[in-house]
Amino acid sequence: MTPKKPPADNMNADTAEQNRSGLNREIQSKIGQQLRAMYDDVVQEGVPDRFADLLKRLDKPAGEDSK
Amino acid sequence: MKLDPTLRDQILSAVPSLRAFAISLSGNVDRADDLVQETMLRALANIHSFQPGTNMSAWLFTILRNLFRSEYRKRRREVEDADGSYADSLKSHPEQLGRVEFQEFRTALSQLPAEQREALILVGASGFSYEEAADICECAVGTIKSRVNRARGRLAKLLSIDSADDFGPDHATRAVLMGHDS
Image (spheres, rainbow over the protein chains, first blue to last red):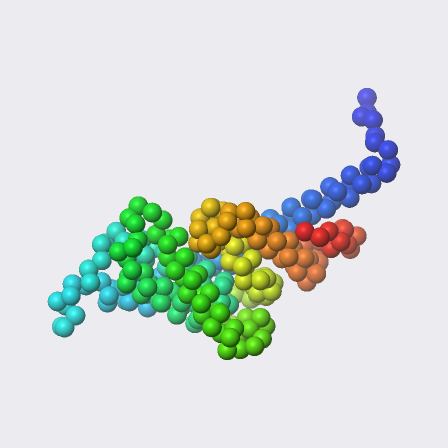
């Protein structure tokens, strides 16, 4: 037994709605992926020496400053 | 000064993500690294005001964001068309921004209002909750949610126009999408 089909007008509206939300979901998931990929590309560079050195330089007992 | 090793480690481990955030905000690696350095100096100078046990990363992001905003406001006063300067810096120095594959996305991102851009990055890439992002941006949770939604809608439109093959199967569906105001 086949399910009863909705009237043509409704079907068209439903299909359009499905396409739209499906496409939106697809686009949104693609945007999310790109955003994270772009961000993680930088994160994966780790801590540049410049910042490790800066912290090392600032983080020492006061006495060592005059060394 | 002598820094608590736990705090030092927390600061260091936040640096990669701070850089990614700063680059996304400023669109310029050199400026971003200066921002990160300034953030670290501010953080160390004010480390007594950090409450141990709270989120160090969120604290540092807040400092960096405030630095960026005040610099942006200053530049805006100095340069009349500050709105276009971010996009222009992308055009003139694309090689600064790493891989070409992200170029189109970065360009689209650069066309968002700063508030929407930062909200989207904090929630969509940095992994902060809406609540944390609201704290960092000093606004209501609902405001963050609506900025993120508007950012996503705007990006979808920008990217659909530019790359139909990647983002839309055919013109008819694209037309439906483009007619949909988000």
